[in-house]
Image (cartoon, rainbow, N blue to C red):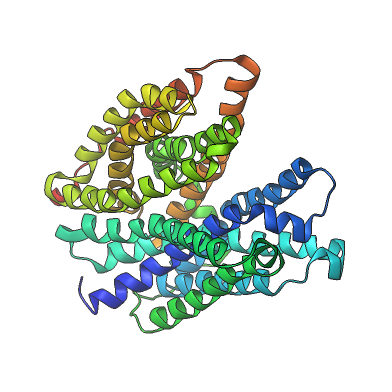
Length: 413
């Protein structure tokens, strides 16, 4: 990187880490949050409501990308990164301070919904904005490694969330966790957001400023050049489906089949994600060495081969099955996650990079990642199609490989 590389990397990474930290702690404390904001006699209905609020955050991502993307292109990458982290930090602080249903009644639940919407809005530009910034500040021969380090921050945030949940539940009585302990991680998230803001205030912008069109005109012009956006959505389709199927849905499916092993299955998944961090970085290093487009083709093919056996193993809902299934898919999946950040922003011109990348990425996460649990649950529960989710995952290799067709390696650029 050109200037203050450590600060630039930290400034870019910490927002992604905070995003996934919030993602994790909200899930880990879903029952306590449900008791605080959605008191119901039926705990099943309560969980539906609390995870419904959780899902709204995903739906807000494309909306956030429509606003934050143009900010990154028109006002500068730094402005986009500052805006996203401020919104994220304030949302975390608000959740930590929010009065419960017992104090505010239904208004408390609506305020929680608003906070989750704001968090989803900020995420709509955070990951793509930070990747774009690193791409534009790193030397071309190190772009793969630099962007993979930023991407690895996402899993690091999830591991930190799991660690925070474990420490709080081990050191506080259950009644204290339910009363106020669940708020602690959100205060930690707010503090981390202030740290990210301080870091980002001290970094240079990566985009030269000049005359700019209006935001609406810029957005329309970007959407007219839709082909790169379709390519990005196709390229990341398989990785998104695989991630949410193997590391999210099937873990919850195994827990539903064997509730007594819930802590064990969550622990196995956390270990898998921790092991995935260095594999993501390896993917970036290999992209610098052999080319990002070439290695992406290899990893997608490898993931397509192991997808069906990995999913079938996890559906056994045994500790060995969960461990073996995740282990089988972990290496190719994490290599993909470490490779595509250095490839995708280059599909867009500098003037539309944040907008095009943010919209296409957020739409893919919302439309494919967000619907994986529905598709897999229908295949397993309604149809009884045991190998259906694995086949569904593997078939997404077709659009991913199509999107990579004809792309040149960055090392030859």
